Image (cartoon, rainbow, N blue to C red; front, side, top):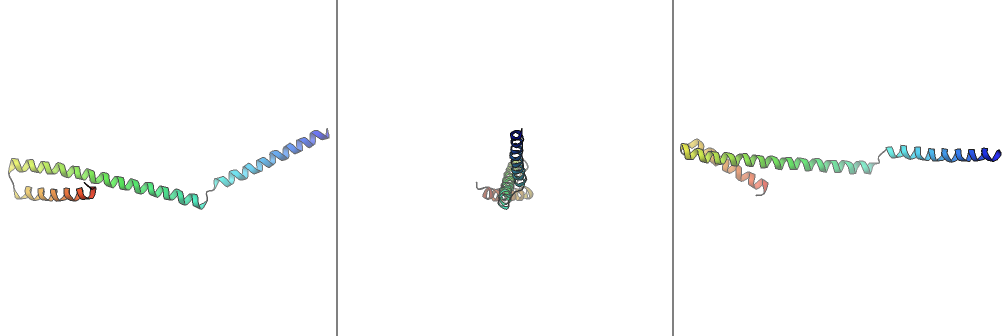
Length: 107
């Protein structure tokens, strides 16, 4: 009978030791160290900047497409209604803006 109670005590001691070890490990694992936070924030910052850059480029493409559409509509209006000063001035401005957009987009 004495042997069984020592085995029970030994088993309880091992289980308690494992329980303490795993609980300390779980609590310690909850916290993040400074290097992990910095790496995570840098990764997040890179992703945000990448999305901003992509949205800006997409916006430039959309504006270029809009100005190209305006360019061709103005050309057809000049053919139909003649070269009035307002249409010609607007066409020049649209051509200038399209050229600026081409340079920004790298065409």
